[in-house]
Length: 212
Image 1 (cartoon, helix red, strand yellow):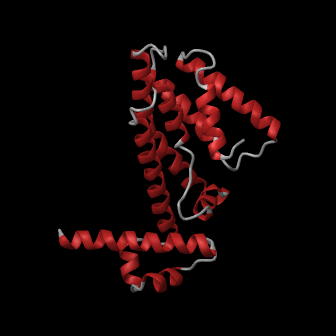
Image 2 (cartoon, rainbow, N blue to C red):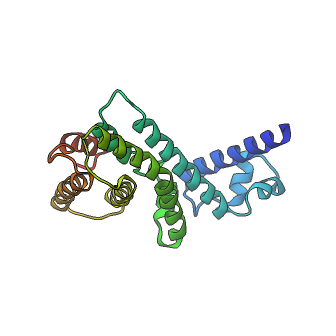
């Protein structure tokens, strides 16, 4: 058990240092040699955990995705807020972000890393669907929402939100305002929520994220 724990600690150390290097020097500007020097391990030790620099980035993508899901679960479980506020806050947590900078996310969004981008979205979708669906079911029970298909509605909201919060989606301010209105309008209808009920909490979140 002790050996397993040490191996996991070493793996996380490699990821931490690689993430810092990617943020500082860029993914393309960081070599395996840079990572070895930063971590202070032999090449064989690094390759025991990761076979390539691409595999390190892949592991970082998974870690970021899992962190996003953890934040979403935390928002969903905050019983001090209404179910409407919680569902808006939970959906907003699905916005990809990184505590170590934008470099990793920029790499994920590059065309040549499309599979990594897809993997991040799949991890988030798989992890977030049951969280959102449970909130929708709670809203249906208290008659805030009205739908027979909480799970399917959760899928729709998550897919829509991932597109909405995509930082690489180029648009004018007018187009953004239209998309915000459309998001709120469509979200209220798939949830069977009262018209205008999502507007205030959603606009609050949008302003906090700097989208408007």
